[in-house]
Image (cartoon, rainbow, N blue to C red; front, side, top):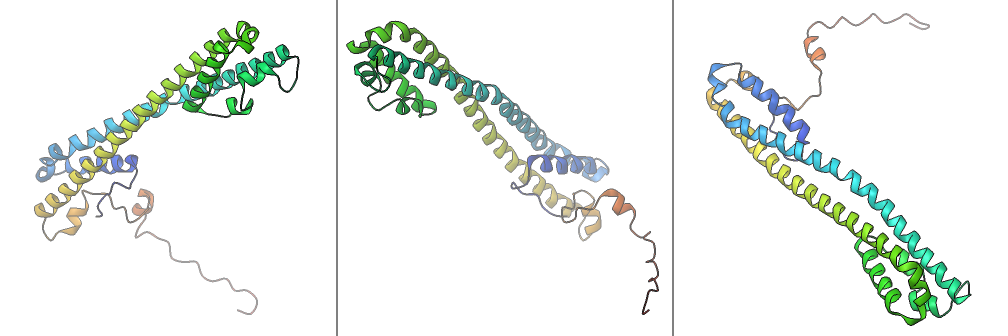
Length: 234
């Protein structure tokens, strides 16, 4: 038998745990060990299910965020075009300089929280700078709507990330308790069947080999090797 460890996947641990519970139920002497191990096994099952659900819940906000961020960038670019129109200049002018002192790229390059900060500052300039009064009349409402959608979606994704991080931490703790409970049963089995390694091994997966059950069943029935063929020079 070989011990389990927390570096193994939860799926592999659960498979070994299920097999161990089945084995314990085969003999009267070991049935009493089920009650000590089963809670750890069920706790890991619950933790894995919660983590899987949290991973699935990340999908929608992650995808939606890409679209709302792209939409916000579109509105910012449209605002820049409006400024160019007001300035009657395709590259610069008082309205454009008031809104984009560091250029357009500085407003659309940031990501996530940085994008919110940059757009909020842009929104403040749009609402207060005298040189952009004509742009404000056409762009402020659209910018507010795009910024609100992006902020809400980012908060949703951050909330989902937090739940996933928490679920992973719970799973990590459940894995540690599972391995400790499994190790405890190894010690108990050794005490129940001292100096009987074959009996002890019946209750635990042997992780040292990757043999299939078909291969194990076929042991001892291997056909003799075929005689060597007689070719040129034999």
